[in-house]
Image 1 (cartoon, helix red, strand yellow):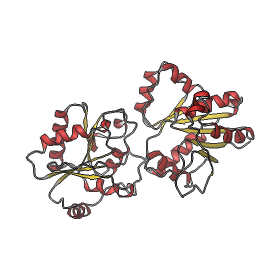
Image 2: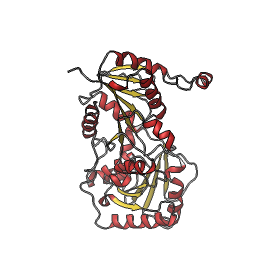
Image 3: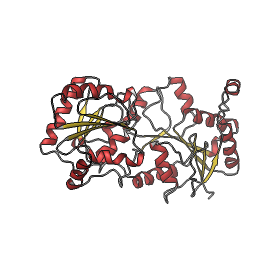
Length: 367
């Protein structure tokens, strides 16, 4: 039987120097013994590192506006040229497209124009919740996809309901967490960490994200200014945002290197996740759960698929300030009471578990 050639297709260069969740876990996968890909075809990378366990072809993306206006389907022409040589010389090929509609659509057209679809299976990895396409656009997007990987069952159900048809086979694969970094620490270690940051005798709240409106910081700060106004035993740490304004019981810590972020999850007692958009998965929430934080979480997107009631409290109406105020009070009282989470994060995949499941999905996508 002829070997099935497996190709990973990504606009992002790999390894990627940016702090992106899926590029980081792909780097882990491709350099591990779990890797099943024969080729990676991707954009250029500024990283000085290179993938050692898989043949990698770096292709330049065509971004010339004049050319793209004349020939709208040539943005990834160099990627397709690299693919053509591999597919032409093999009878069975699986191509996994990483989270890029335009790259997928150019691949689809390329397969049709070269009569390659009969020997190529296409797996599309959706790293968000939904692309919110018009129905006609969605049909075009799906027409040559054999399997879609969604991050959560909720995302699948949402897209199944949104579109008039959803033809591809579906797999659900939750994002993983590096459990060597994001984990419970002993009470003694937490006490020492709080002392290191001069936060002993404080109940520490944490918000950690990029400063975008959909991340809900504005709502959190307004709720906090009301709830914590006359309290001296609480502190809110804001990681990822700089601010010159001084607010009572609030510390803005700015951007933190990715290899230092786990310290703040270990430091915190309560994690605030006020997402105001359809969150694909919520990796920072998963990291907080694994670190043993009490999580106060907006129910947007797929968060209920992996956060349990034992992990904290859900905010069903995250656009209401009063709901965050009452949520903060409940979280505070629960922490003062007997709340503990000894099995924190047991439901969340480790990098190793995710790698095994991802490899299995790709291998079982053959025609």
